[in-house]
Length: 221
Image 1: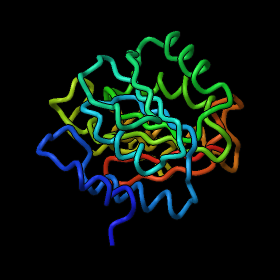
Image 2: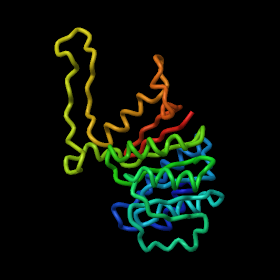
Image 3: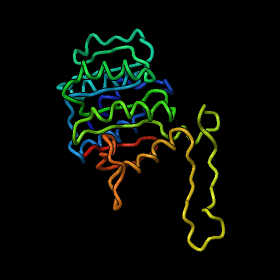
Image 4: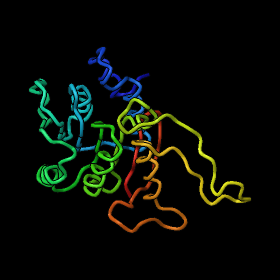
């Protein structure tokens, strides 16, 4: 049986290729259920036509939702009283920081980045928003697979890379595809506590990383 968000999303199904698929909402439902995610403060970066914003509004009526996009569209949000729709370019880090500090002074439970799908932009947004995420909060990164697309501005076709140094009995480096979004989400492993410890910064507080097709879930310590 479809979960709560998937059921709600079925009301808004359209032929728009840039809108989230029902599979995406199914993954949300699964992850939120398993991890007991029930946010009261949600930041969505990248709104497009507002479908996912409306789904989140109906799915979490107790939540305050801040929906940001690089350009404001004529989206009808009047029936969604818990949504605040604002213009903000994710590259404008000072404005993004100021908006978050004003709207969520006590922190954020859930962040969804479904904006540019460019690795460098998404990494910078993460560095701004992740420190504002509450302990146990979840940060979702959408469409990280664009890094495998040769047609994408920072993507490239996949090619297997040989261990280095070549011919060594025990190679010390295992290079892998690191273009765009793929390179960014792989870098998050460096910020997850491991046997040898990670960088001691405000963004090295990752409790758990989970990857599904096109979605990366990050849970904060």
